[in-house]
Image (cartoon, rainbow, N blue to C red; front, side, top):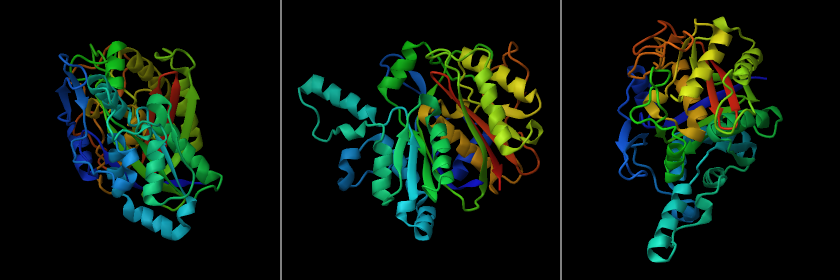
Length: 393
């Protein structure tokens, strides 16, 4: 059975409209990464913040008011027409909501605890639901009147990729006829300072697969899809998950499980590597991840397929990264990209000569024809790996 992504909505440091984001990706635009010490006073770090003005949640949903849910609401509003059509076709009870996140609204808890320390009282508007991992799915399902299964997956930086596998399962088991799937993560002190404590953040702009790379830039984003069996512009051909079980925060340096995820996704898609036009790499710009991933990709694909990491333009959006970067692939595969533009690997540095030689996409590079097949990788702490294959339908 084949499943389709009928519509997509994306917000990230590159913009909040699909055409705007596609243009920025084609240019290799890094202007969305801006130095800020909001979360690290006296130590500015480059962050990828969503610059769009976000809608406020209505008073009836005040308990869910947080930046994460505002990002989700902004994305969901872009999909209202498609969701209306699906609801009219199947009924609200046959439409599910599955999201991925790693932070939810924990920033609200940070601010509430700060206020408690300074004033002795928690702000009246604070509610624990704002930081619950399941808050986004609960809010969107309720706000949109969707009655199917609703839940959130939180597996760190593979969260929204796992959500897509879960949505496919709901459709395959005939528990839903359509699923609103994706994720959101917003910037907060917990993650920024946490990665800083791990010495995983870059001192400047991140350099995926670049010589002298020294860590990530963190970002925020929302990415949502309407997924169903109804033929749409992009088809989900294969999606696989594996686990390293190697280390809490470091990848297996050999990348055996990562290579297995890529191969399994291709086997499900019934494709060989020569049929893939572009691979979006996880590419965090940390020394260990990029070394591991480049080895695994070279083992599976050799040096032929065009590859690159988009995180040099958006930052690492954590639990949303898988859905956001699959959304970038969605843009490449649609009629909005007739010349077959690809996403460049932007790192403002020489490629690391110690890594296996891959076919890095450069700014302005195109296929000269529509893109047919993309594959996208996402990895997480604890060795949680996802690889997804999508195709122009």
